[in-house]
Length: 304
Image (cartoon, rainbow, N blue to C red; front, side, top):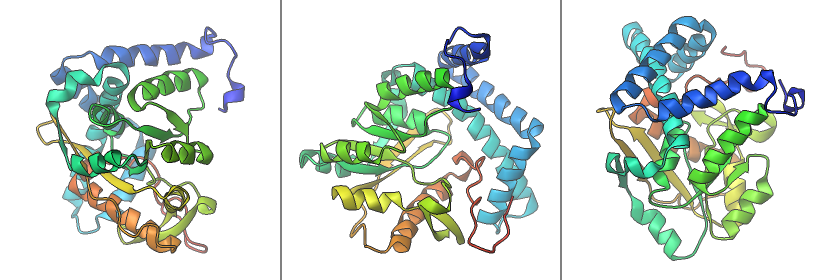
């Protein structure tokens, strides 16, 4: 359903399920930590059992990316992926609905010196993030140390869009529509850091085909374009939930050197290599639920 199909009033009955979902997120954000984990795990397992279409997508992605796993290892990773992403829903609620200060004791931030150096020089930066289940909570935790804007995809539901954008503006400073390239460039040139996650399939027109887990994958060209237009450093950022399920680690790597190179495929491959490396550290926490390999080179059959 497109935005134009929704009623103009948020009091309309069509929005009642959305109000219920928003209320549930506020409640979930304030659950005790252990209950939050159990609720997220239960939610993930429920989707794993009841949504075969989404399970098929996850199974396909993981078989393509981890062919070395045997059947039992593969089944375990599929299940762990749904659990991690179920917990991620509760983490998102926490990031959107609560002050991240209450989680400061739960986060370790490595490589801060890389961003500190850029900020000391008064420069803007393009932060390269990854679509982990911890994405929005990671943004909230990052805000405890460094300010940043964020590029995002607007939601079709206007009520949920308003809720989500207000939450992200509180976390990030400014939430920028992914179609607003001028806005991204303007903010970076004004000395802001902008968080951007270039690891989804936006179709053939926006992409080049570059290796990702050994597969020729539609890879967004915009990363190199933004870097070229702004002259800003490209800062790889990793973030994950630790094995204790109670703490988190964020880590900046050094800025990409000699980027962009002028070769769109080579630049996309470098970004993909960073993303793949981050995923391999905690593969179950990645958002395998989306069709990452939807767009195929001309003449190749689809995977899904």
